[in-house]
Amino acid sequence: MISGTHPGAALEAPRLRAVWAAGALAAGTAAGLAAVVLPQPLLAVAAVAGLALAALVVADPDWALGTVAAFAVLNLANLATDYHGAPSLFQPLLALVTLGIAFRWLAREERPVGGSRAAAFVAVYAAVALASLLVAADFAAGRTEVENLLKDAALAVLVGLLLRRAAGLRPVIWVLVGGGALLATISAFQFLTGSFGTSFLGFGQSAVQNIVGGVDDVRISGPIGDPNFYAQWLVMLTPLALDRAFAERRLSLRLAAWYAAAAMAASVVFTFSRGGALALGVVVLLMLLRRPARWHVLAALAIAAAVAAPLLPSGYLDRLTALGQVGTVESTTDVSIRGRTAETGAGWAMFVDHPLTGVGIGNYAGHYQEYARSLGIEVRRVDRQPHNLFLEVAAETGLPGLAAFGALVGGAFFAVAAARRRWRAAGREAEAGIAYAVGVTLVGWAATSVFLHLDFARPWWLLMGIAFALPRLAATDTAPAPEAAP
Image 1 (cartoon, one colour):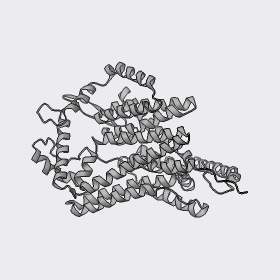
Image 2: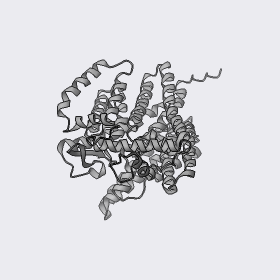
Image 3: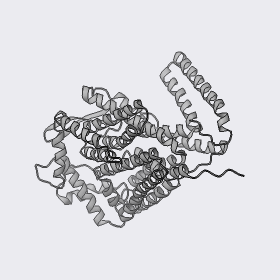
Image 4: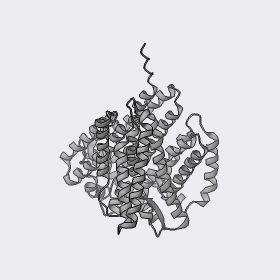
């Protein structure tokens, strides 16, 4: 994973590998001694491992990118803080990655490249969000939302700085797929065995919730604690797993990718998320229709789905069909659907009342009761979120925010399409396939965002960073080699 770019890098590679081997041996020895001597050996081992990882993050951009991806997909920072009471890990990680970029620039002359496209789009949207604080009734809530936006969006910029070559795409995709497979395996094991008594260190959270009518069941929520957002993560990762299943040359890797895709799809079902189920169907269809279309796989999946339908959890199909009640407010309407209808109506009313400014970022919840009461369909006497990202942006930041956010998302899709065209023209089908899969992940995110607001968004920002970096990688990858001097 050494990424040196200076002329003598090839000659120094054996020496550097020896250094890394010696460092790993020293870290292992220190960890072993700590486990025997110190009163809290697990903490000591974790500290040694953490220091070793920190050194790798500073020294190697591939390790830095993989670590950031693992933190995002496994929700490690939030789990450590909210579930285990540990200090914040996310900001120190961002600082460590930034330190590594500076270190490699000064010590190795590895000048940072990339990240500018993501930074430009993020800056425009952040500026509009910041300006909306001028009209926010709850300035503190708005400021917190802007701070969270800037911290999460920094991932997109850092990815552009760390992803220096197209060869780095495959490893980070596998980190994301592997993380999704790990979470989905825990979730599937929980649901199929009924072992909900343990949360698996927070990676397997769940709760009994209403499914439809008088039917209650356990909804799994992975490391997030919310089944709908967990389903959104899994939907976004499924296209990446399918791409690896189609493109990997080794049978073992293809089988691993198929397993990851199947486990994540099953876990989406176990969340009972209606939006997740619909979006999963969309992304799987788009991946199977990629040229050349895999009609035989599509037919096999359709048959498997028909066979598996009677085995679905109780009330699952009834819950899905309840989506047809959206917009209705009769007494027989599903309570969740009535709530979503109220949230959507309130958001639209906020936008209509404040089309140019919105009510201020982070201020939808504070205005919800006021607007929901006027609709006459409120069923939840607590502040609520809009459960529709695009309506949330419109209600809180008005037309300027909607335009800036649309440019951000549209720019990512444009970047994916441009990179894919360039790679296909150069005959680089593997890289073009990854670009297509990244585009489908963004489609999956957009589809689920019709039912969800912007929260737990770090994996999305990471994938946005990958999308914005693709054109630069494609240009570097397909640039003609310089002619040798005569």
